[in-house]
Length: 412
Ligand SMILES: [Zn+2]
Image: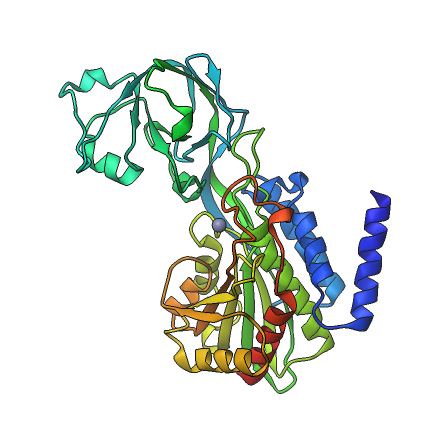
């Protein structure tokens, strides 16, 4: 363990003296942030530990605070699963994270309940028994997705099990409020229509407010100190689903956090013309809450921001990058394409339109020009799953992405 830290420290000293981008530094940051002790950087103290780690990095790098602070606190409300979850179908135990996921809007529950499978016809209609009391104390099992099911099922039930054969991802944005029933995603192959009962133990606690924080630091510009370029990424992730299951969040988004910190090291050594702000958000996984909070409580007026470059899912790269807002800010996108072509960098730089899928979005909605970069390639396949750990981060074309960003910033 001690040797590991020594190597880590030596790596930093060595690379600070020798080169610009530093993939090994970025990998070391990812290694730290994905450790179990960081609890998947959820809103249950894991975010605080990560924020303090990022703060120490920023101070070591030599970033200045923004208006006297490195932290911007904000409140959110979130449901949290506090205990280990127990789930058995008849007598068969199911594995949390692998076999099933609990929707975070679920309330606490304890006991044994009858299962009722409701087949849907080809147009998605359920064959319902029109008596509400039939469903009251049961768990309904369905092949429909939550949206379709909720639209077609008019009764209250104790719970719902959605059978899934693809898109088996956990999300936490539905945990901003608690609903009246327990909902579960179950892998389809784990279910048999012979099962009659579910045995479940689930303990949740609704935290309102939970105080979390954005973390930021800056480098003052040499030519336009009052004009700013923001390099951003979210450092929060899904946290824990009960005591036994945690989501390390390597590709999503320890990778972007590490890249932003490495870029900060570069700009401390190579002072830019514009002032640069390195802004790492919390609250993204709960619905872009940190970036929405920032644009509504900006520490630097939004009108002084020349450009925002947001990095999320940076662990792949073999197939290049996608640029959200690429077709919105076409002048800047052409610049990016030209740099990539002339300098023979990435496999491809692909434009996409507007999308509310990461922290660039609150900025562009306020009229601040912004791109969101995400890497492409099947090497980082795990998404919103316990397998998205440090081994899911490859930084395949890291040096070229780094060069693309620093050259683009220079040409803005
Ligand atoms: Zn995510």
